[in-house]
Image (cartoon, rainbow, N blue to C red; front, side):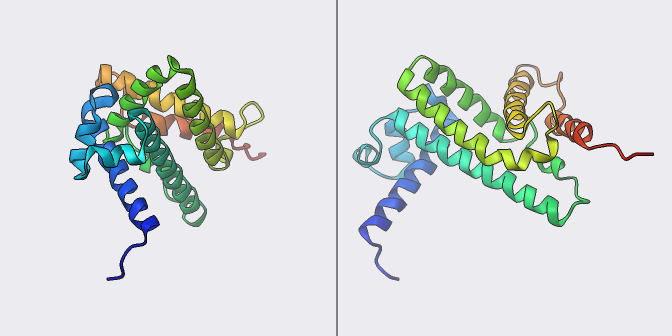
Length: 197
């Protein structure tokens, strides 16, 4: 096996730290997680964490950025599949409100509240979500209409997902886990021009 270059080794260490941090944050929450736990989960020293990230905030932002890119890629793959397999009900493949992503929704909301009280972090979070929305906007074109741009649809879908997930978490019986998909189907039908009879 070829020896890793310094840059490759650093990238591998950073990847392991982000993956470990994602696990720890999901298990303990943003405030409950510690750098010590992340280091232990990644099987590195605490110094290794701080040589890659200046703070827990920076580590969480890296985890958030990684997660948003992964989600954008997932939705992009769904959009490509929609072109090649138009008969498939792709909205059925969206993560349900009661799935493993539910923990991440709570975690992101916790971090949003923290960021709103910290102007520098808030700007970074806003920039990440701006990029995320721009990545998803082309995918949302089929749900757009004269009244709603693709960007509007993405913003509404994000708000819908987080709002419904929080409601589901507070009272699981009140909302069906597939409600986001059903609302998007209704938007798609409303945006599709009716055939002239």
